[in-house]
Image (tube, rainbow, N blue to C red):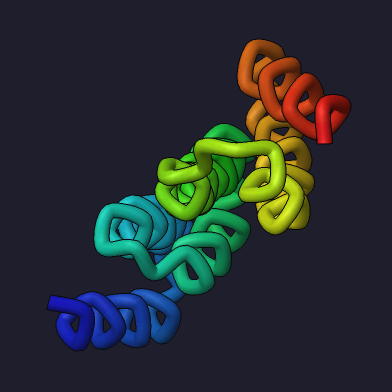
Amino acid sequence: NANNFESAIFYLEKIEDKSLLLNAYHNGAIYYMNNGNFQKAKYYAEKSGNKEIVKTVTHTECVKEYNELLKKVSGVKTLDDAKRHKYVYQKMLDLAGKMGDSKLEASARETLEKI
């Protein structure tokens, strides 16, 4: 439960146990990421000092957002439809770049070139 987690962090900060606190921050980042609260997940990931968990949270958020955008364009059948969703394809291109997925990036770029 999030309230229990927040209480645990509060008390760990008071007793100044750096190792336990960093571990709690790491666990908090994972907890909030798995529950879709990326703002808090990023906060705790950054507090943990673990660059890999920061990268994982950012990547997971990008994947979630990309998939939501993909749903928006799943019904696009014509060039006119695609033109109306150009901003979606541009955002998909940006997210693919952030994720480091060259195939998704190439696909979005190809679609944008056609419209």
